[in-house]
Amino acid sequence: TVEHVFGTLKYWMGYTHFLTRTLGRVSTEMSLQVLAYNLKRVMNILGVERMAKAMGMAGS
Image 1: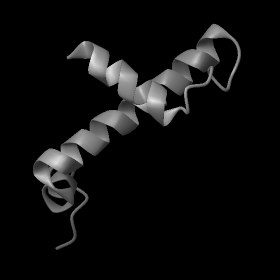
Image 2 (image 1 turned 180 degrees about the vertical axis):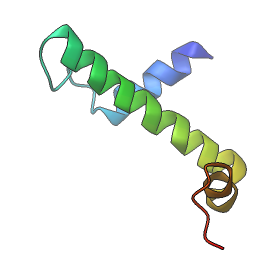
Image 3 (image 1 turned 135 degrees about the vertical axis):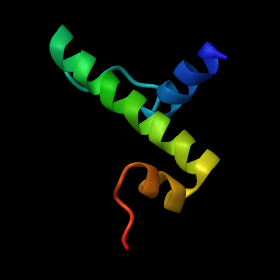
Image 4 (image 1 turned 60 degrees about the vertical axis):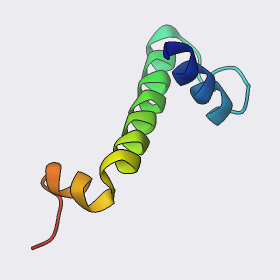
């Protein structure tokens, strides 16, 4: 299942190299991609309303 995650991230990035240079910046770029992937999964599993409520972002 790990390969699927990296395949999806590579697809989202357009099958290209990282947009930034240096290890720190590439690490940041990859972290943002992983965060986006995880948030998208949570939205698909819980739904936007439940995710927002769990994050304390839901309206009253």
